[in-house]
Image 1 (cartoon, one colour):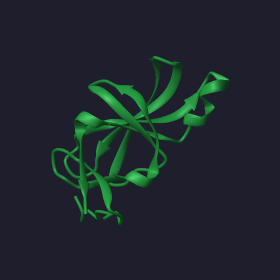
Image 2 (cartoon, rainbow, N blue to C red):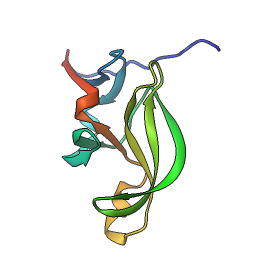
Image 3 (cartoon, rainbow, N blue to C red):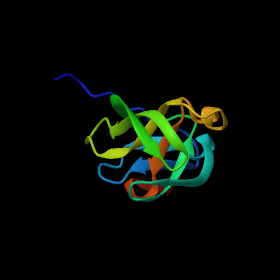
Image 4 (cartoon, one colour):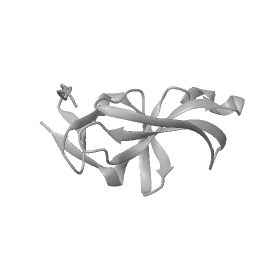
Length: 111
């Protein structure tokens, strides 16, 4: 085990892990608020920080088959959502490389 380096995000609005309160994503990185996750509403983000990726797996989601990695908080290992690795439907390709963070697992803090 080594030192854990945690990135702090600038800006007035930051989404944080609800368990350990470490920064996860900036409000400016939101692409869409119209998504669903395992635990309810979710947001699609362009980028996320302080995360670790789980193994790659194919998953059938509401919009079809996707290759995804679960996203875990790098501090407390709580599952936060998933990352789209590959979309098989041409209309879903815009999601590739993007992150789903579930609202139920996030705190939104204004600074």
